[in-house]
Image 1 (cartoon, rainbow, N blue to C red):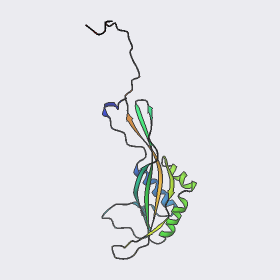
Image 2: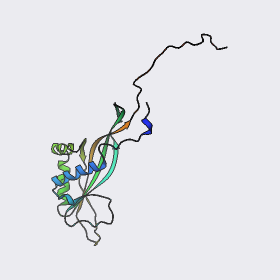
Image 3: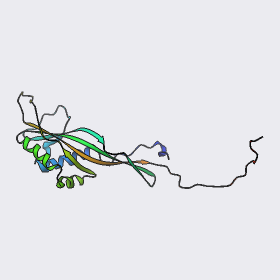
Image 4: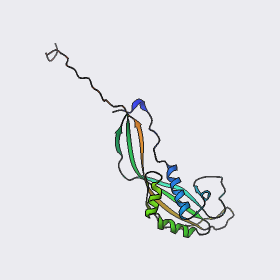
Length: 181
């Protein structure tokens, strides 16, 4: 079997953006923080907001199992289980309490049900909260706590696939002498 016409794979059904959106919404409901106080990390030239806020940064990815492949009408579907680690940095007053709450509730069935609403995403575990050194641009110490959460993400990618679903069989006469003269 060959991929049809060298077609490129379609985008996976669960993207990094989907994972961060789901986790961000859960953080807003859990800590609680307003939606504009939870953001994705590694953005530059942006001043931090005033008050308490959280920054999510994807810290790693790893496979959990070997791919599984299934076939549909004209397509090949590759299913992958992976672990996605997200570092959550909590800034401001109450950051330590918020980090403790995340570690406590991340493995709760309510969190699993919440994340399941965003596709095949499930909580695996949360690392213990850790206080981090953080000095602001004004050379002032700020209260920052960090929790790394690990999620299982099951995603699929679909490829176009050619199949031989019909075969013509026939009988043809040949020379019966071997080796040929």
